[in-house]
Amino acid sequence: MTEITSPVLSVDTSHRVVVRVVIDGICEAGRNLLRGVMRYARNNTNWYLRVEMDPIADKGPEWLRDEATIYASSRTPLLFEILKRGRPIVSCMAHHEPMGVKTVRVNDLAVGEMAAKYLLQKGFERFFYYCGKDTSLAAELRYAGFARALIDAGYSGPGREFMGLPTGLTDAGVQVLLDAPKPLAMLVSHDTLARELAELITSAGLAVPEQVAILGVDDDELQSEISRPPLSSVQIPYQEIGRRAAATLHALLRGESVAPEPELIEPIGVVTRQTTNIFAVKEPRLAEALRYIREHACDPCSVDDVLRHVAVSRRWLEGQFSRRFAHTPYDAIKMIRMERARELLRDPDQTLKAISEKSGYHHVQNFVAAFRQATGETPAIHRARLRANAPSTISGRPN
Image (cartoon, rainbow, N blue to C red; front, side, top):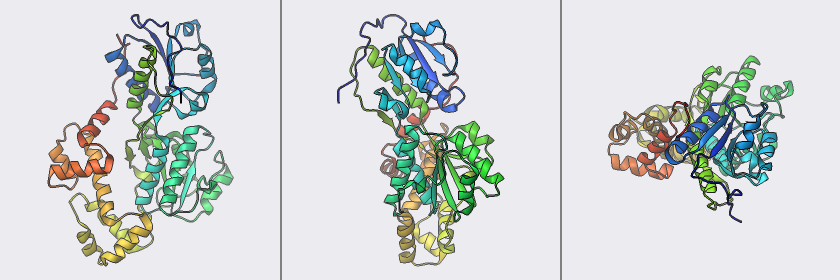
């Protein structure tokens, strides 16, 4: 594919370039993305940032002076107007890729895959995907990743039955959930919709998570906190996405070529709260094995410890795990340890040695090797990536 170059080769980057950042300011995702843009701009450019948090508001004549744009809103009418000017632009959403806009975004397929593996590890066998009126490409990609991972684990599909509900949660949609065999697990395309869904189905008399487990996307802390019950969610590195988008726009403004393919940033992990805090397994011995692993993996415990506790044969336990989860009991222990390690790495006061021990590893070298194998990066690199996405105050303009 042809590389993308700046359509404004006359831009003089020695002066303060006016860059417009368009976000949905009501969302925590948009604000975190803006933090990433600002961090890059302060350290690497002489940009003058203009921030638009309300993409549907009327625009004044100052918009004509924008020399480049970072666009992170699902609103397309405003994007069309910006594109008419022929100025450099970078999008942070999959929505705009069909329009030929250079995109830096989360790997939405990986979001769906991560969600499926997480819910499978919790023992669910019935799955729904709900995106309501969200018809974006991101929602479709998350569905595709979700369905693909479920199929790979031995579940049938990926027909639209995985969607489960009609567009827009009508009374008929609620009835689908009421009539479906329980327990079941739902991935919802984003947190706002997941919170609304949780409130609606609990008011319909369904228990969350005992009958219906709900997993959102974005880890919007406010949406999660006001949700009843508190919402589990896939965490997206929006600050890193903003930083990378700003770096790409900076390259375009310097007249450099960039690859036309979207630059994909991997999701961080799943933050577990009450809406998924359950194991959905009917076989009591397997359920007890899962509970024991969840509670004791970081003690540490071994597969032999699990076998002694549940009083079953290794062959039986490994057969159950292979059929139900497509991994071994030892894999499950490692998953819990890595989940704990990622949580501890968010705390800057925890040393690597302390994190290793609290994650079930006696030796730091073994922990680092296991973490690299599980995540593809070292604990130090993972921590640095988390630090890059830590909230910071939005104030002032870059110099």
